[in-house]
Figure (cartoon, rainbow, N blue to C red):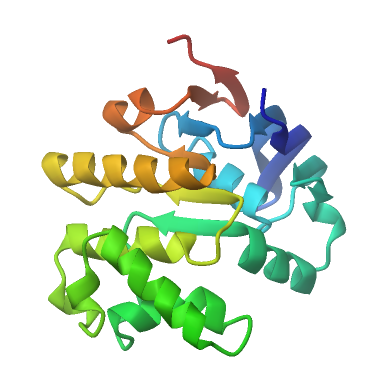
Length: 228
């Protein structure tokens, strides 16, 4: 059995609304193992994206412990969390989040370029990844020249360029038609599975959920495993 990569213990989070605090997460306990694919489902506004933000260190819990790869994220400074994300975590978004003023290859290299000076091997790796996602001939194209499915292929490659331990995806097929969404799921499964990368994805899609190893439902601030 693989070792735990993500551990949440007693995690709570709320947001102030006027003179009161609205609780969103009420004592979340959760373990995700290395190489596991996990879907996070639940009604809109239940805190799924909040949970992803906490696991990534983009936000901090009100209480509780969050460990990724044995590192307690709330104990890190903001700068340390930023560096940790840049090394260990990849992101895939519903609306791709490609930089329109950068070419496809430049978008792909962005996570590496933010950390250090780019090298020749980095560019070779980027071209190899573009080939894996079927876009070897679009390296110099601008994002607005790509279809939605092609932009999401770039986003998947960008999430993997720095070989992260964990990929967090927020509705990765939500902006795609059914056929293209299925293709993206197959591509994600192939690329992440080959690298033994852990995936946690927020989704409303039953097809996405069915392709995961586990499905967790978040409701009324608590999380429970959905029987398969």
